[in-house]
Length: 199
Image 1 (tube, rainbow, N blue to C red):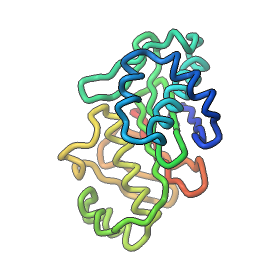
Image 2: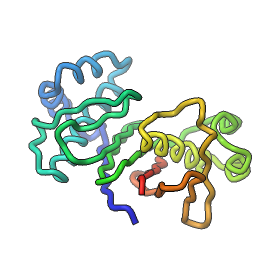
Image 3: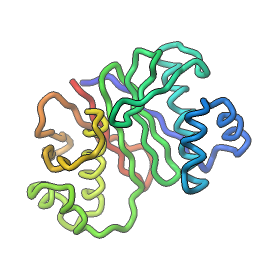
Image 4: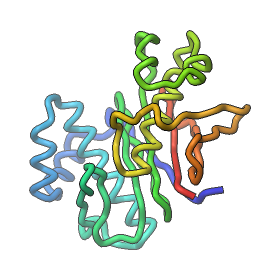
């Protein structure tokens, strides 16, 4: 089984003073990214994600939080230039989640909310649609798995979103593409979380 660690923060429980202090310590490029976001909650999510990633990378690698340098690959996937670790971050609602591992990893979290189940046709194969049926929980399970998988690959969601699909055998999640392990951890009530790790 893959070795990884997940942690999450509830943005609503973080004081504005703590968020403001951390914002002040962020790089100019990350401040610019934060300032460009359209709402206060998204800005808070961005700052909290930076806080959580630094904390977890520090714990994993022993690098002081303020010395970690973030960059992005050509597809926009973030990585730490000076830390020998892989990480992935996701946020939805008030929750920010981060996963770290010695192997490529992707995480996605989504707050359960009312959606048009027909929207599943845009990202699901026929077998996945059959699995989802009229079940909102299963809708978000498949969606978060897709997100986590493509984050793990480092390409982000693209036109080939149906090129990978998942089968469900009890608690086991089986990926159509070899070389990946999939998990469905429970982080917070009312949220669906999926993790994908390259073997």
